[in-house]
Length: 428
Ligand SMILES: [Zn+2]
Image 1 (cartoon, rainbow, N blue to C red):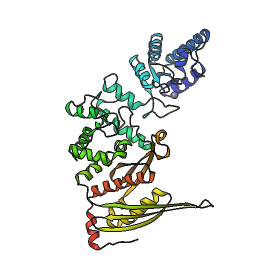
Image 2: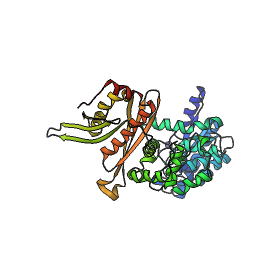
Image 3: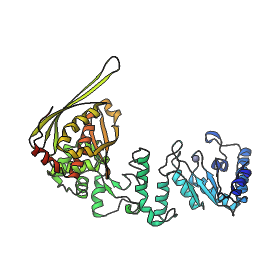
Image 4: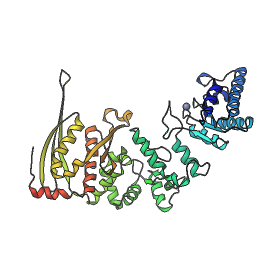
């Protein structure tokens, strides 16, 4: 059957790459659930693998791919299998197909390449069955940066981070913070000690120059960071804080820092710095808000938000809106009034919304909730803001307010004065 299939494809002028499923199990003598086969069966399995691989090579396939279908192999086993097959079939060209089940996928792929495999299979960001196929951004970045293989032309490597982020976006996935090479944490430091040493000795805690893979080194602020990180990050974002101002920011934003809000959004951190140094224009502030959320016996739901806002220095307005849920109602109440003063807000949309409960086991339902919100506007890069509170609606509102402020800063808030001159007043 395999012979006829390969023959037919070759006769039709196609390049043939044969994936030998379970090849690593056959090489290692492993059966269901990774159990070890008895000696006789193990011998038969390896002999069959060699026979099939030999047949493929003889038929001139372009690659024979050794699959670690269960993700159960080790780098040592993979190196031995590739070397063994190459020795038995010197004419053959081999590839490797790995999975991440034991956490060895990338190490196994690397072992295969170093043992002479000329082809690797995986998925761009490691999506796939169970724990996923091998993450190619990790394989390509980690091996090529160190000169262990060349997968893409050298000048293209700098596109790796952008490509990965686009792929996560296409799947509506957040980029995992700790994802090697392409994650926000990949070249970041949150520990205060590392932050201050990074200033003196750049790159001391990094395995490669981030720019090679299109990444930017980050100094982050979370519960483990000290004032040094707050100062460094504020400098990097162009809103330099003094040590005392940094302490002020930390005191005022304890929940955001402990809940990873500033790790999730540099933009929210930048706005917090601007508040501390007094450079954030007084566009608007929420003075109070109230939600009414009713579910009646027939399953009908009625949610409305009430809000009192100050706009600019003096004007106080109230607003009310209904929504599909609390966050929707709050956002509509906010927009309903603010768009009269800042029409540019109509150009931006809320995109993805993600909610993370933090340390639930310690605090049960009173634990912090972190909400991150991404915003879009035509012709502008999306931006992400975050809020942390023990109340989900409040956390969402913090993120939304930051998102609005960001956009107003971008647009210069120029229309605001005009509207005020036209005499747009209090409404309810
Ligand atoms: Zn597979």
